[in-house]
Structure formats: structure tokens, C-alpha cells
Image 1 (cartoon, rainbow, N blue to C red):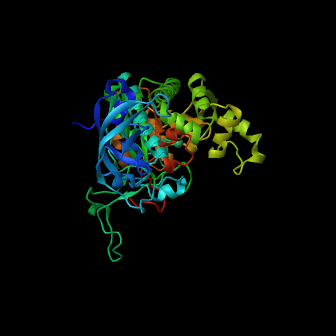
Image 2 (image 1 turned 135 degrees about the vertical axis):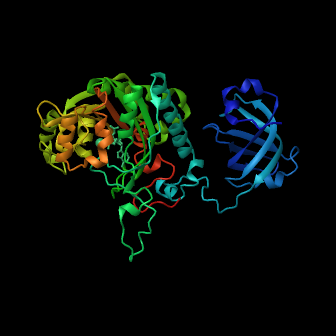
Length: 460
Ligand code: 4AD
Ligand code: MG
């Protein structure tokens, strides 16, 4: 007989009642009293497991099964029985239990509650806990929903390279990619000796290549890991994060912000629909206000404010900030959170930043001082997306690149896009882990990615 996914039992138990099925998975808990016992079994196909009842009269290896530890792998053949009077609506009455692999008492995930810090140290086991099972299933569904959203709208999914020779974001520090033995102190290095014949890095963004594709397909997105080498130990920065970046031709900044808002509402309502058990779990155990907050976002109109207006508001509260603001300064997380949590109490787009604090590719406004950029700030998180209308004029782009000391030889092809059928276009980058934090209520970015890459942390 074929192994049945436990999810199928939950989806449609009626089809299996009084039939014999085979399930296989890992023991969450096992207890027996000498004549019968219960196993809570999970196979990972669903957040919910299944209860197996085993009886001394029926199974040969009762004494062994009764002593199974948490984490042991078993296969069970048994009949599905409805139990409407119990907590779980059905159970499996075992005819046989095969022990595939038993754990001993050293298995680190015993039944008690473990701290998130402890679980980070055993990242290879934490997907087996209820919490991380829920987080990573939501992560999978969220990724699917993003693909679905853009696919339905006719966007082409392009795969942009991970190794690059240009630093698109300016401020972000980059990881070097080299085949040279950099620890050999005797050696002299020359970029010409590199495998690529020049200096190369892990890319912080797929945007530049994305723009080349938007000039062909009109609407594209790229979605993959990107890298930032900054040595910052915060709850919202990773050195390797997943980055979704759409780029759309014939779209201005307002069109871009509408697209972002529609996308956010689509994925949040999609997750609520597709992952009810996981979301109920987060709401009960992580953040009691989570579902209210998410529903509020789906039904609210996102706020819009210019950088200059935001600075006016923030200045009035300067006494309460560690970093005092004034026009021209970068907006820090504390300011982002004040705007979205205290002032607007919902997601807010901040637009038209000073050109000196933003990347070179953003379109310059007529005032010559600000750019058509927008950051989307979420309550509790801060910046979740960063985007802009792009500078399409060759000469204006050249001028700002000169100001920022960017070399033409590194960006010639990107600049050429402005010569060959250049059209108005815009794009943004979504920090996948940041929106996942918002949706799950998890407050540390290390707990929404399988094996986080942060300073001094690359064990796996
Ligand atoms: O604002 P950023 O740096 O923008 C770009 O990279 C543009 N090229 C995007 C574009 O227009 N195509 O990054 C975009 C988003 C941020 O809003 C944030 O959510 C996330 O990426 N992000 C990070 N997430 C986790 N850890 C980090 N170190 C991150 N840096 C940026
Ligand atoms: Mg940004």
C-alpha cells in the first residue's frame, strides 16, 4: 500500500473512514500505559499531525513502540476512525507500527518549549518544531503567491546573475568574488589575473540586468538571493537575503506605488486564505494582534508622504529620537517606525528623497535636489520595499554618475540602454524576509530564513 500524506486526511477524512491507510513521519510525542498508547505523528505535509492509537493486543512490538522518543521515524498501517467527541476529529487505530529509526534521549528537541536563541543554534533541526514548520510553510506559500501575482499580470520572470562587476546600490558593501588565495601574504594581486579578468562581487541587486529585460519584455521581475557585506547586527539585516525586483516599462512612480500596494494586499490575503492553521498559530503564540493588523492592511489605503513633509513631522519629535533629523539626512529605522506606527498607523510610502542619499539611477525631479524614489514603510518593520522611477536621459544620468564617482567603464551597457529606445520605467525591490516578518509577527529576521547569514554566523 502507498504511503498517504497526512494532509490528505485533514483535507478529506470522509474518503478514508474505516479504510486501512499507511502513514509515515516523525513522532512528536508518544505515551503508553502498558496496554495501549498514543503517538502524535507529523509527516510535514500539513501543520497538523495525526493521532495514532496503538494497542497491545494488536501490534507485535508494543513494548518498543511504547518507549519511542520524540523525533523517531515510524511507518504505521491502520484504520481511520472518526472521533467527533475528542479534541482531534479523527485518529488512526494501528494494525502495525514499523520503527524506521529511533532517536535516543540526546535528541535536542524534547517536548518542552525552547527559546528562539537556542533553536537558532540548532538551525538544522528547527524546521521540525511547530513554529518553524509554520514559518517555512508560509515562506513557501508566500513565494508562490508572489510568482502567481506577477505571472497573472503577464510579467516575465528573469534570472539575473549572482556574480557582478558593478556596485549598483553605492552604499552597500559588497562581498568580493575571487579564485585567488587572498590569505597568501607574499602574493601581489592584479584584477587582470582574476578568472573574470576584473574585480567581481556577489550582487546586491538584480535591478540593472532587470532594466535591460524590461526594455525587451515590458514587464519583468527577478527573484533570488542577493548579498550585502555590511557588518550590521540588527534584527532586520541579513548578509544574504531574498530579493524580489519587478521592473516595468511605461510606468511612472505613481503607477509603481499602485502596483506595490496591490501586490501587498494580494499576498497578505492569499496567505490568510492558504495558511489558516499557521496564521492561527502565529496569532495565538507570537502576536495576539497579528490577524487584526493584517486585515487592517488589506482594507486600508496606504498613506503617501514626501520626504520633505516627513522631515517636518519628524523634527517635531526630535527629542525622542537617538538620531536627530534635518533635511538631507537619511531616515533611520526609528523614524520609519514612528511614521508608520505612530503617525499613520498603516503602511506609508515616503517619496522624493534628496538625491545625495539615494542611488544614482533614480530620476531627478525638476527641483534638481530630489529624486522620484519611494520607500514603503510598514508598522513594526520599517522599510519593506525601496524603488524609484529610473533616470532615462543619458546626459542627466552621466552627470549624476560623475557626481557619485561612478565609472563609465563599469556601467557602459546600462548607460547605453538610454540610447536605444529609452522609455519611462520604474521598479522596486521587496525584501522577502522583511515582509515575511510582518506577515508572521516574528520579530527577528534570523527566524524567517532557514540558515541565516549574519556576521559571525555561517555554521551550516
Ligand atoms: O532599498 P534597496 O537597497 O534597493 C535596491 O536594492 C534596489 N536595487 C531595488 C530596486 O529598485 N530594484 O533594497 C530593497 C529592499 C529593502 O527595501 C529591504 O526590504 C531589503 O531589500 N533589504 C534587506 N533585507 C534584509 N537584509 C538586508 N541587509 C537588506 N538590505 C535591503
Ligand atoms: Mg532602501
